[in-house]
Length: 287
Image (cartoon, rainbow, N blue to C red; front, side, top):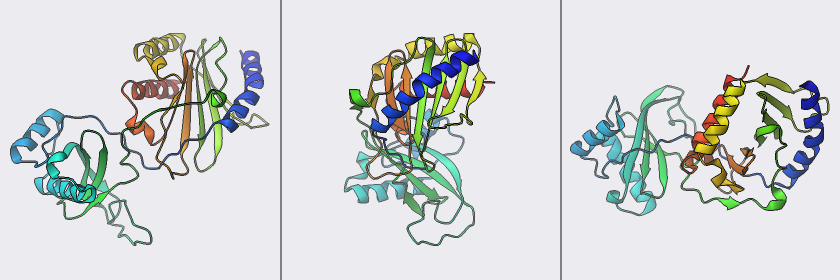
């Protein structure tokens, strides 16, 4: 197997690196937060409606009405729309690490005391906004970086696609960017080999070889089929313009390639997040 792995990477690293040079790296913002879709609460957030949200979302603690109202009023003012056009679709209790609710403005000095509060997600049916609040709603801050809205995919140009997979490879992930600006490739072989290398590592010093069972490989292949991974063939889900220090992920199966980044993963279309999770779970289980 070592010979097969070495031959595979010797023949493929060069052309993958070349393809990556041509590929436009998509942007990402830090601090992305995965948001569940949930049954929406009424915009006026009456006591009766808040009971419905509690029941539907099975929340152990109900979002206080003053917090909900403060968030809705702030967003309505920012967007120039009526509060009745907005819906609270999710919320969770949080403990923020500083007095700025972890959303400091440039040159702002924040107290370092822990602040109990809420993370609140609001939608108008098309877009989503994420708020950090204190416990009472007297302080609310919009997390603009994490408030990414519905993404429209773009077609990856043919000349920017990575090479197709060899016959003995089931799946491949290429991650590139971030603060270090390094590019890593992880491939899953049919026999359960899971190999990770850094592209451009002349000494091959960062290579790691682990394994999963053949049964796990087959289960993963069946999951890709069920989740219709191929319907995302050669699509890219970009991050907002102007973002920096992001990581781009390029996933390739025998059916095609899809590309996303750390922030767009919060707004990926149905089925794709499940495929991403299945791949990450497989990697985490490797020995």
